[in-house]
Image (tube, rainbow, N blue to C red; front, side, top):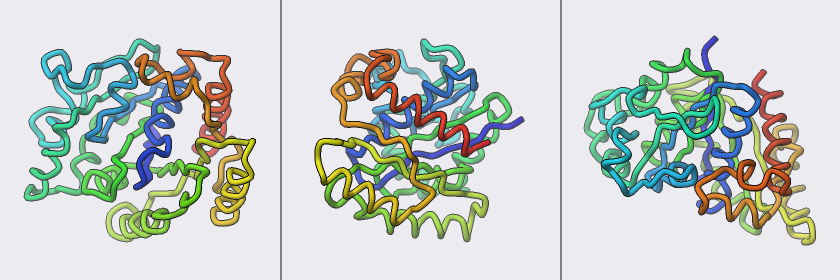
Length: 258
C-alpha cells in the first residue's frame, strides 16, 4: 500500500509547524508506521531538530535542493534517523536558491510530487514540512500531498493569514490536486492558564468545526528545549506534557487518515 502524504504548513512562522512535523513523524514511527519526513523548508529546522548539522554540506551529502533541481533522486537524499522506522530527507538554506532556479524550469509545480511518487511504496506515512510562506515550494508541497495539516498558535492574530492559505489550497485543488483534503487544525502553544488561549481555541473550533483536533499542544519548556538537543520531545522527555500531547495528537491523526 502506498503512503499517506501529509504536508504541514502555516504561512505564519513561529506557530510550532516544524515541531509538529518532527514529533508527528516520531510518534508515527514509534507506532510502527514506516515514516519519511521531508524537510522542504529552506530554514532546515526539521533537519537540525533531528540533530543533523545543516551547515556541514560535506557531511550532509544530497539534500532536497538536489532533488528539486533534478540532479538527484529522492531516495538518494533519504537517510535513516536514529529512530526505528523514521527516515529524513534533509534541507539546507540552499533550497531557497533552488526555488528561484526552478521558476524557469518545466514542471515547476509538480517536481516534489514526482519525487514523492518514486518512494511512495516504501512508506506508510510521508510528512512534508513546508516553509512559512505561500511560495512555489509550498505549492509543490500541496500538490504532492493527500492532506494538509494546519498548526495554529492560540494567540491573538492566530487566524490571520489562514483564510489566504485556504484560498491557495482551494486553487491547488481546482487546478492541480483535486484529492487534497484539509486533515485538520491543531492548536499549538496552548496555555490553559490564560483566557486568551481558550478564546482563540473556541474561535478555531467555530471556524473549523469538526476539523479541529481535540488534542491541544501546550506551551511547554520541554517542547521548546528538545530541538536544541537535536531530538524530538518524545525522545527528550517522554513524560513531559508536550510529549504526551503529541502522542495523543498522533493517535487522532492516525484515526483521520485511516
